Length: 413
Image 1 (cartoon, rainbow, N blue to C red):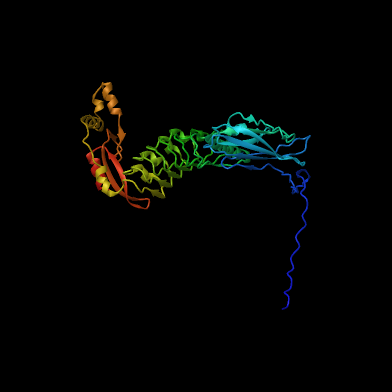
Image 2: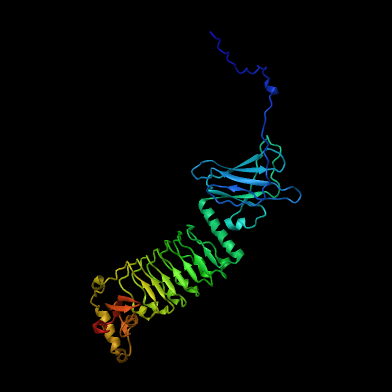
């Protein structure tokens, strides 16, 4: 029998003696640090602003700021400032505590003069706590200042920053929509340049009187705010052309609103208006009127004297099925009938002396919408359908002084 060939095996490596631990060599990778021209800021929820600090006598050092655990649900909040030196040194961490009430932390150089104006309060210098194991890593230059602000203070700071930006760059439009501010910031620096202002989707419970100083304001938007009243001082905005105050809680329109001679567009939709004053005839430049979503039953006769091109009054009580219910009349009181008869027949010339109480009653008059004579009390109401402004069956409510005038309105064309 033939012998099988012998199998060849790979030789095993020689056994070497183990080296002691103090003679082991650890190979480490070399890292190259790049000098950054500006500071890097990473912050999850708060807005941060940072400027690089330099010194004339010392070399520039770049600093990166990172805010950690910046959440109002976390009890302890810490911000870490890392200094990256130009030479080959270790990265050095500097830690400082943020108050528990702080929502964000914004950083400014010590030479930044606008930081106190943006926040409206004093700012504190960032105190650096060095770790004992590092010998270097001091931040050169003027350093930084930090402001610990609550959530609302941060929002107001951004609003003030937007105002400051408009002032610096000479812009004539300011948009503070959706900032959810409670109080309108000071707009005095923009009094002579602002033309457009949007304060929609905020929490303004009162009409912002700060806007009354804007002499050249043409567009004012206050949509979606819980504003309950428009002050009559709005007539100070003489250049106002577009006024939007939809989705508020307005219950009446003030007389000062009808003194805006250049008003072209008025939007008071989805409020709580029950009537439109007859003084609307003074708005001769008015072209668009939006009163959707109110409690209106009719319109005053003065609206027929305007130059409206478009009117919207959906989601109101202006359907003809409501006319009879909304024009019900109560009998006039005997005092009102007597006063009306006294003035219409000019009986005061037959009396030398009229008691003061009766004189006061004779002065409490209004004007009849039909004969323009004196009317005491509410008079008589009647809704008449008109085809105006491209709308059929446009309801007009007439307040007349007597049944005779009421009959004239009913049978007139």
